[in-house]
Amino acid sequence: MRIDIITLFPEMFDGPFSHSIVKRAQEKNMAEIHLHQLRDHATDKHRRVDDYPFSGGAGMVMMIEPVARCIESLQKQRQYDEVIYTSPDGELLDQPMANRLSVLSNIIILCGHYKGIDERIREHLITKEISIGNYVLSGGELAAAVIVDSLVRLLPGVLGDETSALSDSFQDGLVSPPVYTRPREFRGWKVPDILLSGNEKLIREWKNEQSVRRTKQRRPGLLDE
Ligand code: ADE
Image (cartoon, rainbow, N blue to C red; front, side, top):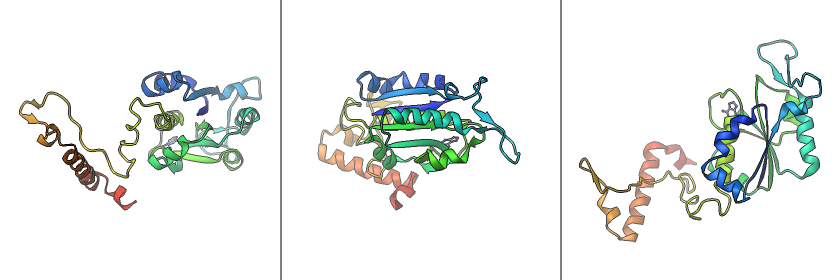
């Protein structure tokens, strides 16, 4: 999968993309991530990418020309399946959406900033708008990093144990059961006997019960869906 990210702050991705799973996916050539500085596509000599909103009001608006130039220069090189814009009023990211996006070949993610972007970008150049939650971030970079992480870990072969993405919370509409490791007892706090029993069938049933119970307690909305 190839992911092109258009941003005013490419350095913000240094941390999230250079560790752990996303780093490994890039090293194994399963994910190819390219960062594009929007300012490099500005049309004036001051490399300006924002301007005052027509009719006044607070905040600056991301200009259409640099964004259009950047997106269209990428589209000249290859076909993109989605051109995504990160925005608090987009469709909420959830596991089914991550699953659907993870099978695409090429996507662009445009990180929002300032008060927003010129609406004509959304109307004419963006194919999908995604929010990562009902709160407002200072910019779309953290949202883009979250989206990329949620997709890349699903790519075949990225996780060592092929089954582990399938057993993630939410994959079957349930949250994960609790997990334990050594020691068997700490300050009198014991690991449930069943997990030490070696009886695979009972353990599977117990995990499933725990998942259902936790989902009812913590995320009942998932059961309605
Ligand atoms: N930009 C600002 N807030 C955001 C959010 N919650 N999701 C996606 N992009 C955003």
